[in-house]
Length: 173
Image (tube, rainbow, N blue to C red; front, side, top):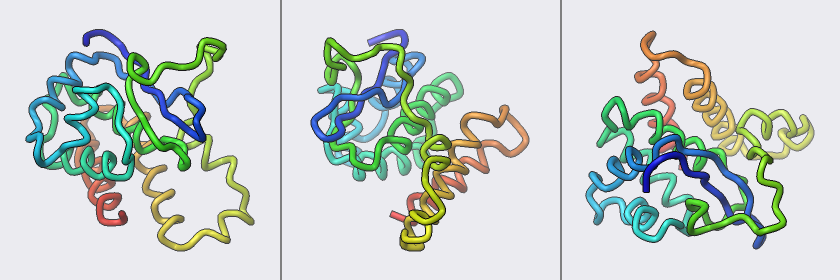
């Protein structure tokens, strides 16, 4: 794989967009550098193109990013994958590259996936109040991650802020 790739997710047997990775070759180079026994779902994503067990994939990718940090040219693409996985629909059951998990033929191709921020804005105050504290804390951390990845320029403690957010997310799962 090389070039850009769409990432899709399965939600209630429907396939929807989840994100885009700018350079699949750089992303797969990072994923292939990870120990396969420690990160089996990351290895399955590379090998088969799609994965079930998204909470486990999320945990693996967070730990992989923190312990096997991608090199500079891989970082943006690893963060795009993390953004797709962390920003997935809460009801998603599978995620993968469009080659393995294609959109249906009648799908509107220009529809962008909902972002973490857009999803948070849609949640009403009443719904928010019914969530347990752990769920609210996770949503705050997801927003922090989204903000760091999408608005922070390199430098100014960006990597430290991103790492702190990922450590907090890992501890919350």
